Image (cartoon, rainbow, N blue to C red):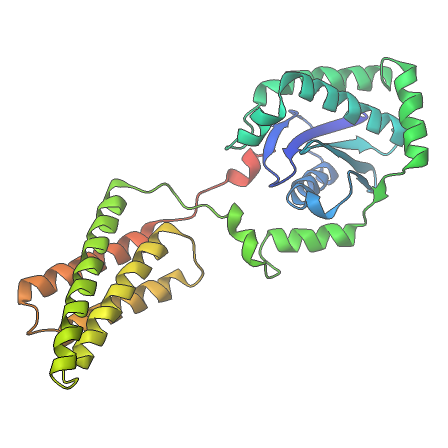
Amino acid sequence: MSLILFAFVVRVRDGLPLSASTDFEHNRELQERKQQLRTISKALARFPDRGSIKGQKLNIYFVCSEGVSYMTVCHCSLPVAKAFCFLEDLRWEFTACFNSSVVALAARPYPFLEFDSTIQKLKQQYNQSGGPALEVTLAEVQEDLRIKPPLEINLEEVDLTNGIANGHVDQGPGSGQNVRLEPVTAPGILSLVLNIMCASLNIIRGVHLIEYTFQDDYDGMWNVVAFLLAFVCCLLQCHLYLFHSSLKKLKSFTLLSIIILCNLYLFGLRNIWQLIFHISVASLSTVLILTRKLQDRSNDCGV
């Protein structure tokens, strides 16, 4: 029977998966523990450098060092000291292969998949012998655990973190860093350029009109408001295309409606072709905003 079933290496600051072992066991509790691993990895800053989660038959253990967390799912019959010995050996092997600068620059999930073979060898060693190769390592880890025992995390804490990670609890302003949109396309770049052009035309016409408004006793003030409002809406369309936002559909249609109304109000100061150009650019931007989707993270690539 395998005592160490799964190992997982992640970056602490954002929970980016760096490497993981390939497992061929698919019992229900293992899948639950792996889900909890992914959940904890996204909130490691909330936990100490060492921790554990007790399960019915399977336990989770993790250690964090130099911005990287090493996590494992083990059978409950495996002594705690041996589980942390495995994590220390895993940490030693990983730091020997990859330095901190390479880890910091990683931008995609699982950039070090080749490390899987090392994890597999280490798992096999522990599963066959039941512990580390050197007994002195086990003694040192036992003493260290006696002085500084790992924090035992209860399932309620994990469930709360899981709710935050899946959007069931409101997230703070800084939590949007994990939300990524699909790459900007060529039509998207074109719409941004055209939108900036429209915004520039609106602000130039609006500023020039302010001078005449002061001279004509404010008769054209609403024209100035229309130009400036259209200018702001063009910039907001650019922002809405580039960055993820809640209620995107409502916001995009609201901006489009305001731009159309502003341009219709300015009929006379602009000819029909100018109106068609401005409204067409706004419509194109709206379509691209609505069709640019969130990037599919593939649920951690099936780990």
